[in-house]
Length: 532
Image (cartoon, rainbow, N blue to C red; front, side, top):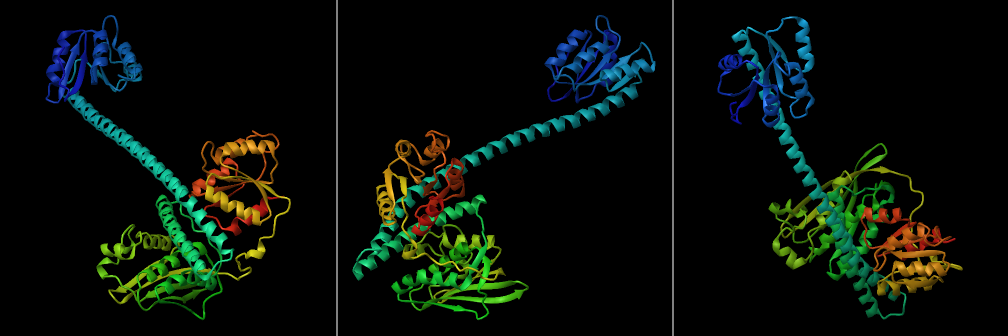
């Protein structure tokens, strides 16, 4: 038996007559073939099992085990079933034997005495077939390896995404929770008797807290946009009121820098449009806030105009013009990149994260609008956002609740689970002002114990707490851990504001979610809906 060269194609010859083997070897000798031969069928089985045989030329009539039986065994084994078998026989030229051989699994049937030209041609054609098969097997192996790498890369990406989401959720909770306490205390202090100087300090405290909150929201928004989870929700919007609310919020910043903040509204401006008012506010807040930041003399102007009308739609352009430091032409594209400023020294001089304009650009694209900028260094800039909006007939104009709207609750007892001392203080004061009696605990386990021994109309539950989280406690309550209290209304406080976090709370069994820092109006209205 000849040892094969692994780089060549292996062809096995099986014949009980050595002279027939010698004749075939002489006929088939060529560089790309490794000819392997044996006179014993059992030896042929071992060779096929141990070596990578591509083609086998097998005599039909052999003692002990004929060629048909040998091929049946080969075809029944997954390791050898793909060998191309050519039967060689001298017993008969009857068609039934050829049919039997082909049914057994052979690809051809040759009769002795062999025609050397025909044999060589057929073997060469099968060699070509083997090459194609080997190429396919090689491509399949490469494809499988590539698929494996893709799966691994996908798993790494999903793991990285999960780590990022967990980090953002934890960061949001750790920062938004104390901000909630600061804003809450500032709101409560506003209701007390204060001097003019103290009121100014409280206003500055609120502005600083809201600025910090804005940075956190910007980071979370960018994360949502990158993950493809950012949603645009359109509803009836009072256009002029929406724009004026932004102007009013930013007026104090302009006054602090002794610059003017003006607005110009087109006379043809529609009263109500179908828009995502929250995201429109976010765009205007970023553009006007940036303009104020980079303007030391002169002023900033918001201009809102109708460019075109088609049927029930209007093309509206929002332009923010400033007399600030301007931007060099070579840096205009750069300012829309995440964490980038026009110049390195800009961050040192004016501060900021470089997130605002990146978010504005993404929001503009998500809303289907266009964002444009023109600027001249040391003269000023104009940022404009243009979009088509559906016009709607105004029905009810949303109005902010005032203090008189907080009618006292009657005969209401609430269980509060909150581990942050400052937030405990704020919630105690708010609930007290609303005539609500309450019990305060520091984690989910204590909340379960309190609920076992007391009756409540509602539970306010922080999401993240030591010992037992709010989510674990909610699942236990909904699962019947305290008989008869499975359906008590539960509102969770969550400083994590990703959509998945809110969904997790609802899936756990919460009736509603209040994001930290929360507005008293939001909490009041949600409690009113659930307290019976």
